[in-house]
Length: 354
Image (cartoon, rainbow, N blue to C red; front, side, top):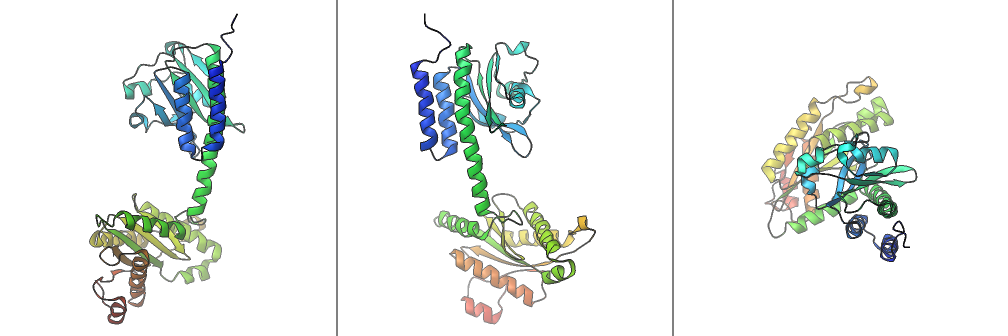
């Protein structure tokens, strides 16, 4: 007599295929999509979802789903104590719930937002190295026998490896494009990003503005408080800059006490206004308060805009840099932008400013 709890030849082959995919698919996001779609093929149900744990908040969020509109649930965050998914993640044990009305853990938040009715759930944890990374949920499955749970648990192991690889890659990638001290983007990212922005906007001529800024008299800060507190000051200043920006704008630690801000889509006038707002925010902020000091800072700013002032990355950076140095020579703590009409050497000789 055939044992219904044993995996079929087709199901075993599916697991082997997923194992091969782990070594051949370099894009972890695509691999996770493959895994979820394989679950759909093997385990008929109403919908299938992958929830991952946010490492900063320790909450579950919807990462991928089939037949559930992620836009409806993108803002849902589940603590590890909430819902069946939260319990599975916390306990690192799978659950098979035949009727959610009889479950003390069931939360209907997703049903309310998606206008869906959940009757039954199979939920398994994604665990790697003893740490829970997320869960896979199969909602209203067509069958609930033990074999279904065994198959889903095997697939969850593959998914856990894919999630861990994705997170490790993301950390390596973040380290490669971010400044260690400030957390802002670094120069490598700046050059690549600007090249892409200018290339993308060549035809439609959408503006891209650049702010080059330098902290005024920063050497006196280091001389007065030391290098460690000087570094702390740069960290706090970087937060002032990043808190002043809304994506797609971003800040860059250019080197030492120099910073760059990239403002995609902003023309000259709006970029100057934004720069003035950043300058005002820096002027009113107090730094090193946690160390018992009340340090006030000022900075000099130069602004340049593509395509009005320059049509390549080098030209844009050069113009913003020169404008900033004019501010330094003219009393500091101000915002200036060079005109894009005259050749650079003439602008430099005449000190032409707008």
